[in-house]
Length: 399
Image (cartoon, rainbow, N blue to C red; front, side):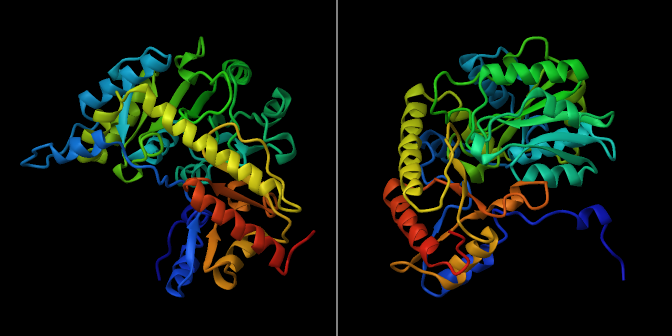
């Protein structure tokens, strides 16, 4: 019988979604499942987004331009002008979520066997997208004991080979919550400039920063107009994950022309999502202040709750709405599955993402989980009480 391609067989399961069948079974058995496995905010999508879609008066749902509606591209450029970097609508390519933007970029810059350097733990889909485009992830390991801080420049130098094409950074980070400062970005600037690499920066969580000052956009780094590619999205900033509208932003004309050809091949990004996104990119600054305050409160509750569980290590969390947490368990994937299959506390259980799926280095992350604190504080408190009880009852506890 025919077989699928060998590189396709190498694609990993998503650590965020692989345990969904067990969560579904838990719900069918009558348990309430607190979903801390996925970055799906429970904050309401701004009314302006939904009203723009509802009032669109479209009679024929046509294809949009392959690069995205000009109005949205201009709204994105105007947004960047407010937060720092000066770009034009010509520097923006609208995509079907940030995922498509990343896939386009990897496809544009990678020849078979080329390498991309990523700090691990990293957003799991970076590995999948790289493999789909016949590339190789080269990890630079960060440690929970160091709050996942950027390693010294020498560690990057060790990883660079003639096949290296880019360094990828998520700032603030999914999955760790670490935020890379202006000083840290300058270190990366020096590396990519010296070795003539791309710097791909995932800035999806830019508005979720709990330290001062907030880091600048990578588009503000001097001398890197041809090197920097920023990935962005409406999903988390506007709690509009289902809209599937993202973008890539760069001043590199060759990258823009190449990715536009890919955009033309897939025809167009979602029309209704673009209509809603255009309506909210100009939203007032108090919206961002409110959601930042809400997530800051959730973060503080999460840290307080985790730090009082014996044997748990929760590092500092400076941004986004995730934490990589070390648990006193023999295997975090077994633990997460056990919680869904065999454990409940006051009729509930918790779903988390096992940590190993966010690492490329074999054996790392086996006692870690990624927690997405996307639930309101009342539900998050219940989830943490459930987790504390589970850690105490787990047969494979190591402390």
